[in-house]
Every structure is written in structure tokens, then in C-alpha cells.
Length: 113
Length: 115
Image 1 (cartoon, rainbow over the protein chains, first blue to last red):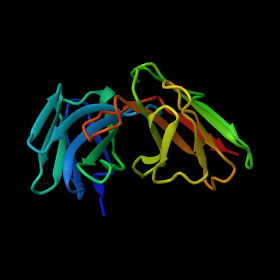
Image 2: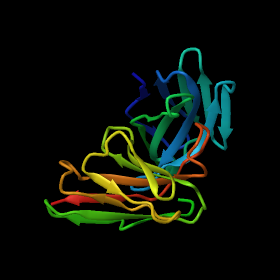
Image 3: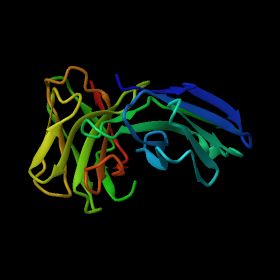
Image 4: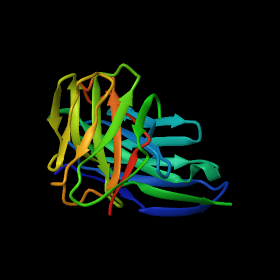
């Protein structure tokens, strides 16, 4: 069964600190993995996309890594800001079967002053 | 939210009533999607459309209906047959709807509450 699991479910950090969010998946055959940021009550916004051959991708203070062998990805946030408070969703797409896209449940990040 | 609008932002409905959620995009995208988001769960696909006048059921289509009469519009009707309709509904569009690298862009969402 194709699944995407994220951890932790929620996280509280102090402003200025770094944090790392995890994503494990079982989608196969694999095509790509995306990280989205979703502010409360808003739609998700794409942060990064990585294909099989890519193992790191940065977008400002956000750096995503991918290990396609172990089917794991992480999203590292550097020098967190209050505006980073949001849900971060890992999304994995397969390369066959109608290009199935599976959404993780997300990690809820709270950045405190 | 990139050229995708959803209305209304909040919607309240009595049990037994049908209600229609609006989704419009000005990105000239071929494909449009409807998702449902519940607390603690990933987005689940309700319906999608890759071309005007054609649409396909997603994973949880029961109790929902859609139409795609215009390229820029993809309204979703939540019918009285939907047993648990209270949720956050997200509309998305993508350039082609074909291929796993086709990026989806999301609207701001509509929160539906059944009273």
C-alpha cells in the first residue's frame, strides 16, 4: 500500500532555532517528492520538488533532502522565524498507475518568540 | 494562492441541503482538482478534470458531484448523500494534469460546516 508518513506530528521551537521534519514513504515506483507549506486556513504552497536523482534542494532557509534508497526525506528549517509557523506537508508521486499522488498528514510547526 | 480563487471562505449548511463550492482559476491550466482535508489526515482527492467537459472520480467521490463547462471553472457540489461533509475543501489546478512532474497550485480553501 502506498503511504506517506510524517514525523513529528507537531513541534514547538523558539524563534531563531533550527528544526528538521521527517517524511517516510512507501510509494513505488517513485517519481518525485515535494514539500508544501500550509498556513492555517490557507492552501498549500510548494517549497521544493526532488526527483529520484536529486538528494538535496534548497529554497531560502528551507533545505530538503531525499534518500531514495531508504525512502526517506527531511525538511530542515534554518534560523526559524515566527512566519514559519505552519503545517508542512510531504507529497510523493509515483511514476505509474495514473501518476498516483499521496499526501502526508503534515507536521504542525509552532515557532515561539 | 497563485490565481486560484475559492468562494466562499466559510460556508454553513443544514443537514439535508446541497451546497456548491466555487473554484475559478486564471492560470490557463488544463487540469483542476478538488481535495478534502480533515484534521490529522492527508489531503484526499474527490474529483479531478484534465479537460473541459470531462472529469474523473478520485478516492472519495461518493456524495459529491462536479462539472467542468469552462476551462477556468470547476464547481463542487456537496450533496445530502455525503455523510460527513464538515471539512476544509481545497481546489487546485495544474498546467496539464499529465505526468507526475505536473505541479499543482492550490486555492485558499473553503471551510464547510454542517449544522
